[in-house]
Structures are given as structure tokens and as C-alpha cells.
Length: 150
Image 1 (cartoon, rainbow, N blue to C red):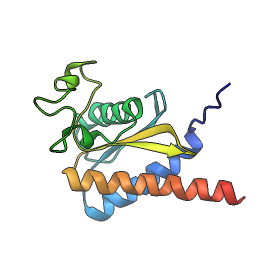
Image 2 (image 1 turned 135 degrees about the horizontal axis):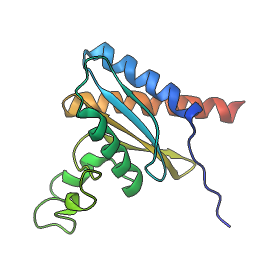
Image 3 (image 1 turned 120 degrees about the vertical axis):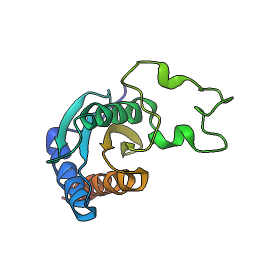
């Protein structure tokens, strides 16, 4: 028997709030998506003025990070990023068209050594997407620290 932890809407909402606050602090109109461990959307927020395309992109980033249990930018980090030309997963982004993202903005959510979901961020440059994603992950860590302490 294997116990599976999974995030809920109550876990996702503080993540969205923290991500939104960070996006507003740095002046970027982002779309933030939180999904469960199966890549299914739990919560999504498109900030006012964020690009319409950001919704699908944020969802794809979250799906990919959850499904592959890695930050999406790691697919293309030289020299061993598996999706780089000549490496073992080159062309993987053509699988599941529209759902598989191999660029910055998808981050797995970990709890007790398990991937329990992911967050996808779209709308800024790579560093901005990372900062907003880090804010979401920090909010989750804070929430879980409170659960463990309580």
C-alpha cells in the first residue's frame, strides 16, 4: 500500500495569493496555475491585464512540472538538459501538443518527498516567472510548516 499526498484548493489559494503579491511587487501581469499531482488544474488566476495566452501556457507549465517531477527550465539547461538537441529527450515538447512546456515557469510542489502538485507561471521573463513561482512555493512551505507544527 502506498500513501499519496495531494494538494487541495485550501493549499492552492495561499499560493496564488503569494504569487500574485510577488507579481504585483515586481510589476508583471502574470497568470498562475496550481495543479495536483496528476496535472489537473486546482486553481488558476489571471491577473488583470495578463495576456490571454498565459492561461494555456501556465497550465502546460504546471502539467509538465507535475508529470515529470522537475522544474520545466531544467529540460533546456546546458549541457545536459534532456530536451537539448542531441540529448535523450530532444523533441519531447512535441508529445502531448499544447500540454508539454520545456521553458521557464513550471515548478513541482513537494511534500514529504513526494510531488503533490505543481505551479505554472506565465507572463514575465524567465527571472520574473522564477520569482513568482518561488513566492508560490514559499507560501506552500509556510502552510505545511504550520500544519506540521499544529
